[in-house]
Length: 296
Image (tube, rainbow, N blue to C red):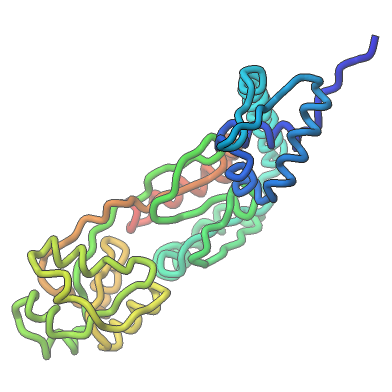
């Protein structure tokens, strides 16, 4: 009697992706493959198992009940394998820790304090990527990401790190030339905008009781760090994100205009693979992060 063989893991991952996303096209986007590649892999898996896995309909493809049941078992098994793989790969504490975060938080919060963490883990190879690009943790592009927003999934864990508020700030020299009334000052000065959050000034204006159209126009930046540096040089008024921008105020580089604060709906979060939950180096890094003044 022939022995049943478990299909290759990449085919099982494809089945799970189709079950999760509901279509070949959506699964292809999630796996960075073409829809035709997904279709080919599903046909291959169906042939190997010898049972129908999907039915073509006018609106696309529907998985059979047997395929859905099988995908649930496969998802559990793959999660167990991923966790075991993560555990054995993380058993050597001298391996590298890859961190991705935005340039502002990197430059002003994490990197200045990083020597302290490195002294605690001198054999650890720490790799820092400062970019607005959201690295794909599922594809092993990084081990931990610090970002506004994000989403927890079956593979990715999310932990809130910090809540922020937005408050107008400018260089002290510019503040001296503006009206004392902060609303008049904001309306008179050049406003500095972040292209990543194009509606920030409009949202703050509505919160402050100012018509959003009154805050249109100004100078735009694709980097929040560049925006604040331009603000520091007296180019205009920016929305400072507190408490992260608090150090610039304490150092006299920026001065708040008034006390009206706009709560930021999205938290600043930590994201990492669930398979790495037991990795001691990762846990140590997260604990160290939370001890920093900006995050504590």
